[in-house]
Length: 406
Image (cartoon, rainbow, N blue to C red; front, side, top):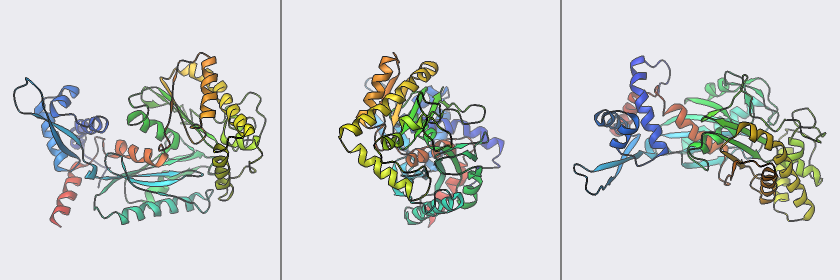
């Protein structure tokens, strides 16, 4: 399916089509008349576009909407067709990495964990994750075409958005990830920082749906974060804004995985908890140490021992102390706290108490345990490859007709 070299006429015709797909992805059940009002178009124009989307298999009609006292034909609800296409989400993380195949609505079809033989070897990791994604597609007997893939990674990209310049948790430096994935995958593909992928997904479909200004903190072995302002990622001039894990911490002096000392990671992360209780390994990104530390943290979070509870609470308090001035400066509507440590009640209570002491007015939302990067990446693929003006609906319609003939 072609996504590049699309004609200007096709782009012009695709703007309203993309808007309809976007609206239906966020509000299933809208009818043609409501869409026309929302988009300031005629019902006839919307009906024509909807007919194209139905023919391509992207949209289906649902139940009729009964309106008392309203004459004329009943309005029919519209929604995305789950079988209209497949979306691929891949997460490349030091642990809990996975690849997910989702339907057009972003719901999971199948997800499988990824276990990398050497996380620091970028080429090998890209080989392994793309092979796993292709295997999932090969095992999918539905025949539904893949419309796009997004890969979420623990690291930050250059201003062009494709070369990973800073990935201390992976051990990568100056890796052109997008080029490597484009060479390996047969579908349109894009890349994104994992925390940014999650906040974009959650602000559109999840725990903070509809929120335009938000701050996410993923507290696990280390701290991941991102800032959403006006529904856009706060990127900074070099695309690395929003990282809090490597801010200088008050009283911090221990070494961080980034190579410096005294970062917030060293006092407010899962690794800081493990250090406190004597269960941390020397800093490393090798394939043995990382899973061991993740298992140690999981075990610690399941314990109610007093010294472990104190370590977890102190880590949450430290995060709250350092977040408070940032939240007052940025004034987000909501703070989304997620990650295995972030979901721990001892950690979140200590964080909330510290923010209350600072008179922070932000609403704190605890992310559920099903929030993961691969799912967020798959949902992001819809926004980047389907609900866009350059989506080639004619090619998809032709593919659907060929499948019907067979």
